[in-house]
Every structure is written in structure tokens, then in C-alpha cells.
Image 1: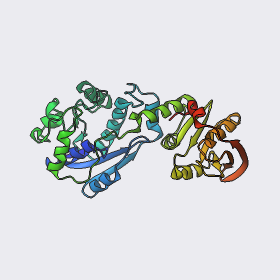
Image 2 (image 1 turned 90 degrees about the horizontal axis):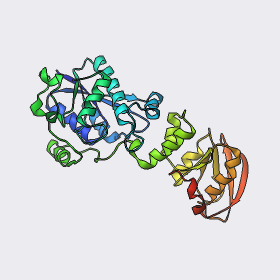
Image 3 (image 1 turned 135 degrees about the vertical axis):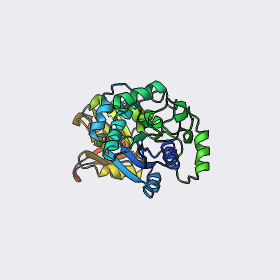
Length: 317
């Protein structure tokens, strides 16, 4: 049986690619590459696990080098899509060889993304990854040059589609036609395309160029403030505050009255200002804040609440 390694994001397009390959009689090995920035739909993945072999590859600090210094630059935000795809194709190539598969498949749609899914960019990505002619894109195959895979007769081109562009009408109709009940709504699945997240990441790169995946995880929660070289992160709700209180590697700021908890990273000279920012989100006029390190209280700081508008200039996002 002909075998394919499918790069699977758990998004709508890659799910449709999976079903089209199956319908074409291809054995599909599903490869999910988790990065610190993408969002995996576990419900979709669990459904796929019931009927196909799933490989989950965790990309961590090695992937961060691409984000920090992409050879082909960024998209509109901090998304290095071309370099990211090259990275993922290289991993897919590794599993192609290990699994003795015949080709790689993706859910890419021609011209859906102007930065990385035009014909010239698709060719460039294949060339850089060393897999020219080995990538089948079931949703757009009829609009693309014949691949080596099709020329060898490993897959019937007539069973593939001719979808292009950003509209998702055809994909949603295909969901109905194929009887798919669990799927992701069409949307961006990567934090790097989000303007607010990108703003936070730029700030992190500027002040901590050697950041790690743990630093990236912190970008996903709370309100972020830049105070000179220091940083304050405040919980936006009770669950975020409780999560920040558990960060034993950082200085935790916890008000004794009702209000958000947070963590402070930086210089002691900026600490009082950080406490004043925290107090501006509390209700009491006088706010006593506990400073904790490794779960132990170091001291208390008392500040008067000011209008939070005074501190907007420090807000990153």
C-alpha cells in the first residue's frame, strides 16, 4: 500500500487533506509538530488517533533559533512562516525515511497565505528542505505542477482538488460531503501571527535575546508591563493570578486585599513602581503587597492606589 507522511496541524485544511488521502487509498501516517507557538486541537487529534498512526514531535529550543533569526524574514507579525515550513518539512523528511513512506503531504492551499503559499514560495520551501517533487497538497494539487509522486502513479490526480485562495466555502462544503463532525473552525493556529503576542515577543527578544520556551509560555498569560529593564506580569483573572503565584523561580507579588497577583522580573529599583501598577488594579485605596520567593514571604510593601491610566505607557499588551 502507498504510504504518506502527512504534516498535520489539526486545522481544517490538514484534516481535509487526511480524509482526501484516505479516500484515495493512501495509508496515512500523521505527523504533528508541536512548537511553543502553535495551537493543537486535541479533540481532532484524538479522533485521528482512533484510525491512524500518529507521531507527535516536540519542537523546543532548536525551533526558537528560527524565530530569533529567520533566513527568509517575517510575515506581517513575528511569523517566520517560510523558515518554519522548511523546518517542518525537514522533520517530515526524517520520518518519511524512518517509516519507509512514499511521499509527504500537507493541507496547504495555493495562495491562501501570500507570504508562504504562493507557487514560487512552495517551490522554494521544498528546495530548501531537500524534498522537491515529493510533496502532495491534496486540496490544491490540480492547480500545481505534477509531482514526482503523481508521475509515478502513486496517487490519482483526479482524486485531488483545485482549491485556491483565502475563501473557505469549498472546504466547509467538503466537511459536509465527507461527513466530518469534529473539526477546527477556520482560523489562525499560530500565536506568532497575533499582533498582541508579537508585540510581547519583540519586547522579550529586545531585553532577553537568549529567551527559552519557558519565557515564551509566560507571554501567553496576563498583562505585561515593561519598566525600564524590568518586567511585571499581572493576572487578568483569578486563574491566571493563581498560576503566577506558583512561579517559584520569580519574585511573586501578592496583594493582601482583593486584586491581581503577579510576578516581577528585574531590578530592585523598579520594584516600587511595579507594586504601584499592581495596586492600580485593586479596589482599596491603601494596598499591602506580599513579596514571595520560592513560596516564602520576604517582606511586605505598602502603596497607595493610583489611577491605572498613569501606567498605560508601561503596558506591552
